[in-house]
Length: 476
Image (cartoon, rainbow, N blue to C red):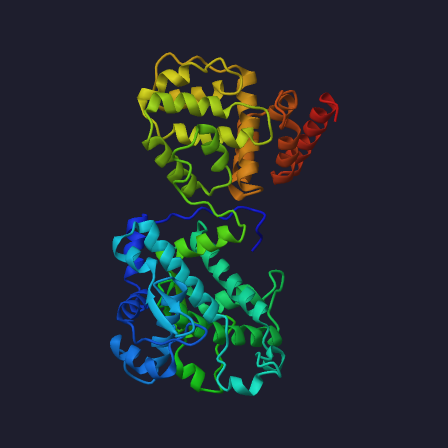
């Protein structure tokens, strides 16, 4: 996942709703209970961990039983310390006291609660990157430090791998046309990190790497579920017990796919991963961020959004404004001859389509504007307005070039754009004979694209000739 291009915008739940979800997560609930349980007699070691003899009492305070009870209590304590719910009051004596953040869970704002949860999340993600170090004494070097080389484990590589997986899960979740809130099969997520995008049929070696990655991810998602990041259906134990039936990395029967693990990013998880992505320098927008900004920020900001997200953002922007003023502001921001202008005008047109008749005066004010007059006429005609002057031939051609330029910028060479190009050439018999004269800065580029996209060789050749003429007319 590259950090140079913005990620698709995420639709976040309200902070109040997310904070409620955070307070309901098993791990934060346990951490808070331990912070309240801790008292003057609670002792910790030099690293802030509960001393071993106190772990059974901590597990009992949490109502935990079974062979993993002590491990779960230890993890909850570590989260309590890292999230500031409990602090080491005296390092020498190893005593603890309630931390300031503990009071925030009951008396703080939703934002405060989410900040505490985010700290808990960081602890769990860091823990999930560490392999099971049972028998760790055997791999200490002379200085008493862990000898990572003898473990065959690279801590940074492991952390980067998990970050990459979580980034891909976020991208899949927020992408338009992706699974959305549906779970993602674990084999697909593992393959997204291992199988090169240009590889046809994966080799046996690659499939084995994917299987190994799935097993690591199975352990990691089991750890990440209690903090509320994901909902996870683990790999079927029967598959792991059967040595002859390794988890498949290739195509799996639909009925069986859930046996190989299914993971879904929760709304709280989407909030948490977005915060981590922003911290790491990614551009990770959220729908609603532009609602209180100007029309120029709205049109530029939604330029790269998928259609559904752009509409959701625009609806929030319009909800804060009266229609006539909003229309005037949008039209003013849509002007320009820069490279981003056609797509701004397309987003403006889409925004205007959400407004009713009360915006009509703003559209009539720009009927004579060479850049906006065409789209204004379209808007008025679609609403059955009276006395709409017919557009000049120049205006029709200019609007056509502008529309194709915007679609190129928004979608590239898509099937929809190819259909638009075919329709234009069919409707206007002499289109290319006139289009090269259009005084639009993108005329030559649009005609070249039409030449690439049109399936009819004769029409495509006409388009390329027109593009050449347009370049010659403008000196390049």
